Image (cartoon, rainbow, N blue to C red; front, top):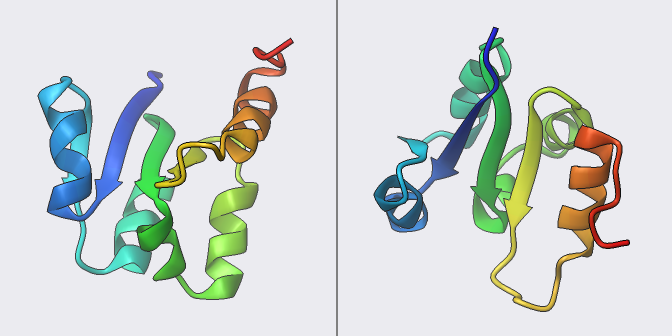
Length: 99
């Protein structure tokens, strides 16, 4: 069993990840795309944007955000906002990397 990292979202969001060699998935329907990813046991980390997450229905978004595997990392356009990322990393690996 592997733990792949995948970036999902609009073509504008995923292009940088693709250039960095990270697997990407361009999605038009956020809910359908996330259902596909959550059912894949090889996916360990999903990287997505706030915009993509906001397109999900609230109850489903809570399910996605609450999962430990795969953990979903939401990349914020606000460069000063790293607290959610800090919590997600601690939840995923059990260590606070900022301490």
